[in-house]
Length: 233
Image (cartoon, rainbow, N blue to C red; front, side):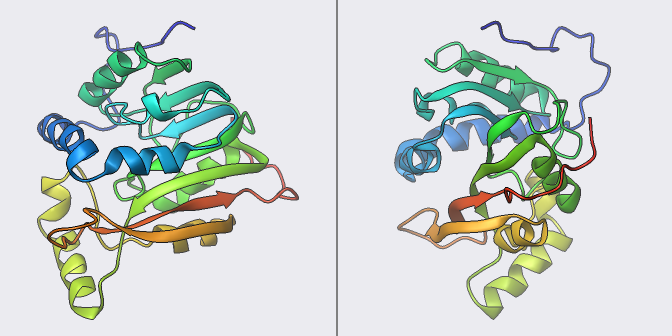
């Protein structure tokens, strides 16, 4: 399946532009595959998926190699140009068809109810409008469709949670491509109308120093089968 990319210079402006962070993230994420156990997390995140999948905030495409053969197509949305170029390169070396396209979580460039599953992997921390992004997830997911998520957020007790909030209001988003530490992804999914399935807390890294970004959740949610069709494209 041909890959689509608008990185030819015809696009005037990307919805997200963090080139320095993108370069740093690429190095860190590749190292984390083995040193921090992220490859195993990706395997657990994506195991058993079937049908058409949309991955929101695909980054440099490190999830692509872990999609099972039961997935018929992955549409990978990535707003940052450098990361999107890396994702396009990664998509060339996968067995599952992957279509990498520009776009942002708050306005996904796809039709409503067109996907069997949505993958959210370390993206909800950095979206500009979390409720709107999750409303878009509901819109593009068919009723009964599945959300797989691996997200970091608030945790660690009162002292750490205070530190996370202070960092969010000062330097952290500036240094980390718009990332926020004190969001609660599980609560946000519940507020957005998803039915929460099994999920568990994962520390990242699993061993070693505890960081403000260490408190992660890995799990599953569903769009209710009886959910009314959201308005949209």
